Image 1 (cartoon, rainbow, N blue to C red):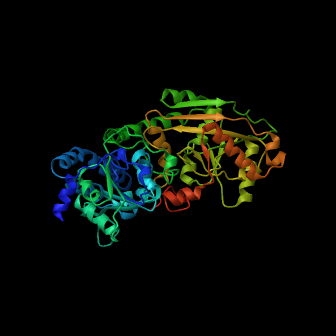
Image 2: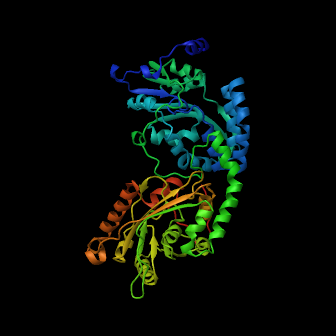
Image 3: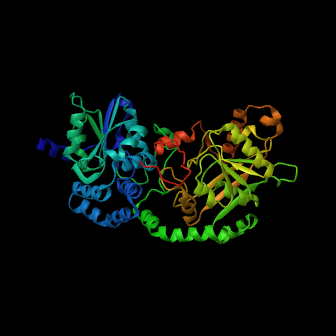
Length: 506
């Protein structure tokens, strides 16, 4: 057996460019992940995200400082030894459910953005059975592999304490070399080995040698990525604070800048808090916040004339505040889920909607008599270029409906979260070195396009406003809801307790 493995390592495999899809149907495939199905051969960014999101700032910093030693161990000693130490630093003591939540909500977006187009075409073409064989922990890659690649996953298995609730940091066996071959043989125990094997390094040769045909994937950091719509799923919902994939340099910046950024955020918040809305645009410019306002804002309400209902898409919790600044006058915002703490610290008047639709309608109608009202009918933020389904409640209340398209520019940290401390969301937005917002006031709906004056159904009006905003932003409309997002990312329906902003345990 050892001789066969050695022979496998010495065997020459053609490059993946030599694969001929027209040569015959291939039904099954086994492939490595990092460097094979993914452009990058480094799994460090994903371990870093686990350490940061399921662990802490200090754990992520420790992992980053250990990175040079891990690389030296990988090159000078063995791949298995380096992975074992990497796993220990990342996972020791972490709760299993926290890691599973990160694997479900944070990692898939970063994995999906790095899928290599040529190997994905080969892998996807084997439609009967696909298997990913990787040295990365199965708990870390499983959600992405199953949902986005439509494959089974065989990865390194991690040990847990007797309770099964926390990881020890030890591994049962690193899946490299002969271990990969053994797993493939076990998965294809019927004797019919995979039609195609794909790998990118010598430690993949063992399992590739038992495949009917096998191909090496040459390293190429500029290799074309698979388009998002070519994968089997899309990362419409995702969580985590970091905007960019945390390569060592960007990870170092994100951690090193964090305390500086927090001080900058406090300055930006408390400097602008007492400033009148009509002047905040100027103080924003002084503190490095970019605000672009386009279109014609609706005229201010006058005695005897109710305010306008400003209907906008939802990017961060700051959307209503930014709309108020763009208007240059105070507004009232209504939201589908808000805590007393968030309401207390909001610089504009905030009102929470309730499950009672009739009571909500009466309350918004009363608020419109007092002035302009901002509502985000998606009910929750969405980071990607999609609009969630618009709740139709707003359409029944007034004929003075003004669609507003908003886009937030966040280069380092996301100012929204599904699992974390929501009261910190605005601060994370302001922590970005150069945060920005674009607000576009679109033409108000004509009377015949509304429920009140035109007799349209509320759903028709809501869908029309959604399409108008989507067209302006270049986004795609969906029928997904707030509940869909929170069930995906946090395992709950997204309702916030009124007493405090507490993160949901996972």
